[in-house]
Amino acid sequence: MNKNKNMPSFSLPGPDQAKLDWVIASDFVPYEEAVQVMEDRVAAIYKGEAGEMVWLLEHPPLYSAGTSADPADLIEPERFPVFQSGRGGQYTYHGPGQRVVYVMLDLRKRGRDVRAFVQALEDWIILTLAELGVEADVREGRIGVWVERRENGRVHEDKIAAIGIRLRRWVSFHGISLNVNPDLSHFEGIVPCGITVHGVTSLVDLGLDQNMEDVDSVLRQQFETVFGSIDV
Image (cartoon, rainbow, N blue to C red; front, side, top):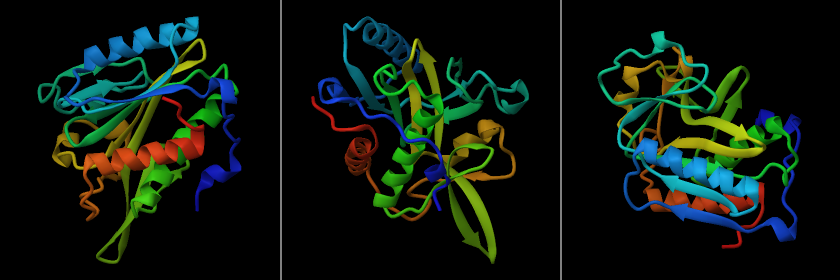
């Protein structure tokens, strides 16, 4: 059951506010470059000089630390580059095979409700995974989207997608990461999101041979379900 259904609904933009750039990067994007692009775009959105943007990309292998990161959770600091991030959350991994989606939306036009915005991001992931054949949900007290797995008569809960956002003057940036087919051993260099008792999984790890293009298509379809139509 989706626990989000008891949470507030997200405000969709009006017809004159629906223009949005949907951009898919063809090459790996260095983390610092991505952050600068987001910073510039958020400033332009706030000033009314650019429209909203959703940016789908992959990073080279790296760890990023959110504003709540505990240094003790960085187990192997020499394994990959480590970046301090202004997003919420703790340590996370980004790398090839993971679809990172940076979401730059103007919440001045969408209700100024942070809780509803996070719920909308969760619902977007959950609906996308459902379309791909995966039942997923949120968990009380935990960030991100989770799946249940049954092995040897026991139920395990694994994280399949992470959420970490930042707002500046009601314009959002950073966003979500969905594990399509990353090297899951790369998560071993950190305590992902500070959680030690649960695992990390991916679509391919769950037995679904999905390529990134198919995932992107479903992400776009379900984005429109949750956030409104895209006019590009």
